[in-house]
Image (cartoon, rainbow, N blue to C red; front, side, top):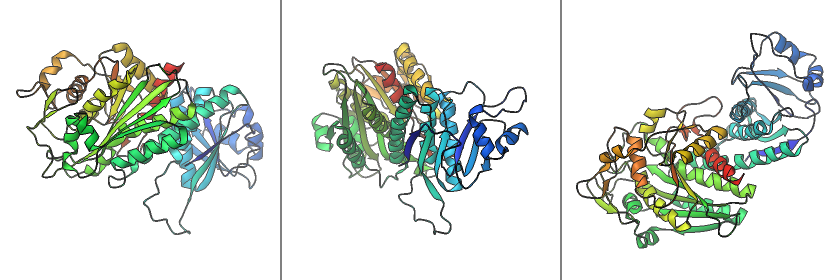
Length: 496
């Protein structure tokens, strides 16, 4: 994991293989000016920084980079990174920090320093997280390259911040959030034969050991005793033990209702009997991203020691076709007594979440947020740029939307009108597990709402944003860490 350090040293005094300097785009075609605080650094570079800006070789555009060679001492290299147009939000600094760390990785620098002494607190938060996102790798299953071809990975990042309480608090928040993202991304990157339901048990136990959290684990027998036929029908086709894992952080008053975070943890989703097409099926190892987001958020919240109660609940299993797998046309009973006609076994995530949402009620929650890579339909609706948000309380949905925007994980609300419920009516059971292709994300959310009882609730469909099948520039293809940021920012908003 990346070692993050804070320093108040001047940029001309820091000893580093690479110093990152972040500048916004210029206006009206004028060249950028060298910040006064960087004048000693420019002098050490014999004016190269000022000349680069004056000649407009670097213009500050989003993701733009320009590398300058330095001396043997001090900053051995300087990378200019564009922030894009003002106002310079936390999300912009997060993206720029990730770009800088990826440049360091390509150069094989091993370490990076980032100048943020003129940055606002929110920008420092974003930068710290971005450096971690850009430096993150998953080398566990790779054979190391020959020594002559190997580039040193980025193992340390020093952030040059102002000598103020606000800057130090911002760094601490960013460091905690970066740790949460790292957990979520590592879980996501693991292949399905490595990340199993028991991996979530081990992750929860690690949280408990580090932070003193409470952990509850249910297996197949315990879930059967709870009447969780909806969850268990998904696990019928696999010999692996399904797991319901609940992690409790108790930082608030003993009688304060907790915020409950719920995540879908399909360690691999073949579609079951309604099997998916073979092309790109390997990406279905990311069908546990909602659960990974819950685990990552719990790590961050526990590190920050906020005065609030938070419970994270994940349901983990694998959706496989076999002689014992649930079939289209079968009817199962969820733990709240409702019967469900299985129309498509590939609509399995909502079946797991149904029993998790019933289970959440026992905590008498102040609010429940669930996250899942639930529907391909959300990708058609919102692409890969926004999380789908659903819930009957518009004010609560807007609170979640604001948290996502602040964290750099934007979301957008879709309607949950009663008219759509007609699509999930069944001839033989209380409801069907899918309403067909039209408004597929909406009917999936309405299905989940049938298992929400007496508490405020918002559903986040992260199927388009939890991972990327292409390199985004600031992060490589693979897991993005969404929805860790949204979860954490929502809880932070409730603490303030």
